[in-house]
Amino acid sequence: MTGTTQPLTRQRYDSFTLVLHWVTAACVIFLFASAHIWEQLERGTPLRKGLQAVHISCGILLALVMVIRPLWRLYSQHSPHLSMPPVEGARLAKLLAHGMHGALYLLLFAQIVLGFLFRWSQQEPFSFFGLFDLSGWVQITPTLRHTLAQWHGNVAWALVSLAFVHALAALFHHYLLRDSVLSRMLPGRAFR
Image (cartoon, rainbow, N blue to C red; front, top):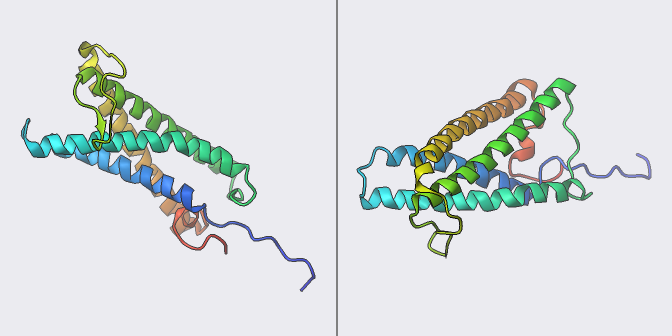
């Protein structure tokens, strides 16, 4: 053994990155599921209205997370104690991974914007778990409500489909390629 020691190489993302990732995933799953569940419930019932209120609050939470995520990513990539070594692999695989992440980000931002515009077009209460109200911040003509709802629904399906492919790719890396792509995003020891 030499007198010099190898610096520890971070093998997992930092805790804050993990929280942002998994809160995003949980919000997307809940938002998609809740919208389909309330469609099966009778209009005007307290259960349906309550589920819609929680859906709206989780949408606002997702918006807050998606403001923080790219800022944290920029910061952590330029911070020596938080940055991650690049994943080994073919150039095409890396391009596909970057394209997948870029598409997920674009769909997430589009979905958030459409959700906000749709809610404003409904001209109904728009609050975050009753803590603060966003009603009336932007005036959207109610005639756009149906178009915005359709776009919001279409983007939701595209987002969930792409997230499913993203999850399958992570499982492919873990079980077939046997690399560290999935384990980097799972909780555990920060260094190996």
